[in-house]
Image 1 (cartoon, one colour):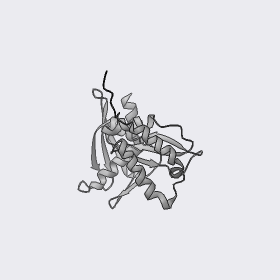
Image 2 (tube, one colour; image 1 turned 90 degrees about the vertical axis):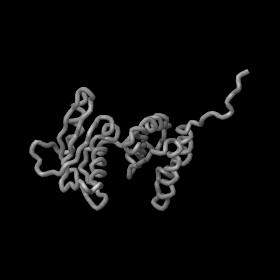
Image 3 (cartoon, helix red, strand yellow; image 1 turned 30 degrees about the vertical axis):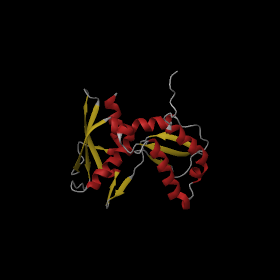
Image 4 (cartoon, helix red, strand yellow; image 1 turned 60 degrees about the vertical axis):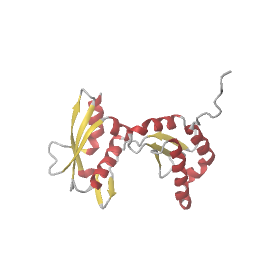
Amino acid sequence: MPIRKLFQKKDQAALFWQWFTEVQQDYYELPESELERLFDQLDKRLGKVNKQLVFEFSAEPVDGKREFVISADGLEEAFPAVIELADKAPQLDGFRVTAFRQPSDEEYEVALGGITVSSEDVYFDYLYDPESGLVDVRLFIKNFDPENEAYDDAAFIMLDSVLGEYDAVTKLAAVELRKLHETEGLYPIRELRRKVIQSSK
């Protein structure tokens, strides 16, 4: 008679959604006085699924649903965990669960590390490699300082915003940053998604 396993590996994704279903009203309301506690609690629960997962909520519900974004924070090795967790999400009356940060067509700016970079400050050119199916991109940034790592962080936040997290990781190969001197022959950053998607077809 075969020896049965006494302990099966727990399905952490299923356990996460079981917990979230029980507390979902708190996260739908998101009272300001409770934000730190709620976010710490959610961060710990996501960490049981995969320590690299992060999350975002929309500021306000739309059509009665608050968007709940599950992200790998751009780390490709955590992409399968994002997909699995989003795929296992139950129907939630007050939430729309989204895998990965999605692209945005809005004008925006990134402020961090003492710098502010607007989408109007960034241009690009690109080269498509048909063999790999990937795109090399050069970003030209107004006032770019190669000694200031905040520009690197701002640039990759912008790539996430323009392309969406999944495409920013899976469709780009090399990303080079340069100082913007003139815009002739370059494209505004808001056109990057269209160029990358066209290239990869």
